[in-house]
Length: 97
Image (cartoon, rainbow, N blue to C red):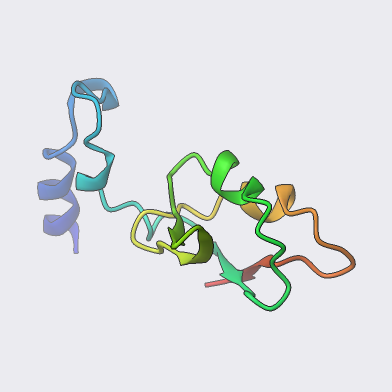
């Protein structure tokens, strides 16, 4: 396991800087978090707050509707769930991985 981490850190840019725009897709960060968002389409009102506020562009939209979460890049920050206005139950809830 140690060899894996030793090799992987070398792939990161110096200082953690992203030197070229639009390359976030190259970095798989979905394993970082302890929690993950779970999307419930039946409750969703399609307000797109989750999509607007997601810092990782992990809210998947198809044909003008939120359809799922990109778990490969989602870090589990919970902003999508926090911003979701549906009540009493949220359309996106955080669960432990």
